[in-house]
Amino acid sequence: MANRVGVMGPSTTSTPSINQGAKPATGGSRATNNANVVKRLQSELMALMTSPTPGISAFPANGADMLHWNATVSGPADTVYAGKTFKLTIAFPPTYPYAPPEVLFKTPVYHPNIDFAGRICLSILNKVHEDGGWSAALNTGNVLLSIQSLLGEPNPASPLNGEAARLWEMDREEYARKVMARHQEPEEMEQTNV
View 1 (tube, helix red, strand yellow):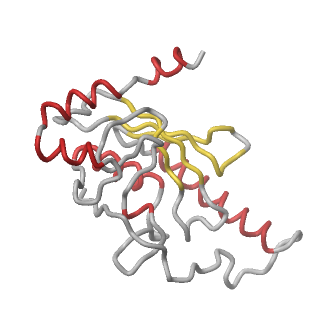
View 2: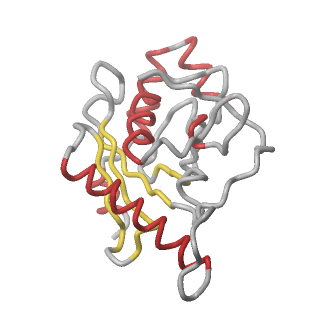
View 3: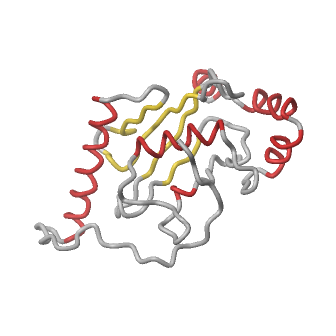
């Protein structure tokens, strides 16, 4: 899956209301918006559970809160990330799917397009922009597959981690050493957080 990654400026495109044309439910349009978002997320969760894709998974962090999920992504084969598991968090805005979710790595990762706070430079995680970005046709599975692909195919021309971008282009052996030094498996993270 090809990814377009890059730093994109703020969107000038207006975000359509998730409730356009719908009659407000009791409690106002906010309740209708939330119900529509929850319905969409329940559908996405069902698709992830009934047709699982190897290497990715996502579930609500708390069964009652559909707007906050935990996810895992396996490092792609034949890359320095192969055999590694990465934990992420996903926060869905109340305007989802018309605005992208916020996705953060919780597992420490060394990568040109991921900073040390876990933020990800990936065009589909940006608001709609004339050069690409988020689309309501995308879903959680698409996002996680794109992140998995980004791990194996960094874009050093648009880095969040300049050092990693330079090493990716000039010294792959040192890059691999830094990846190994930074990465912790989820089990190791739990032990260090106890």
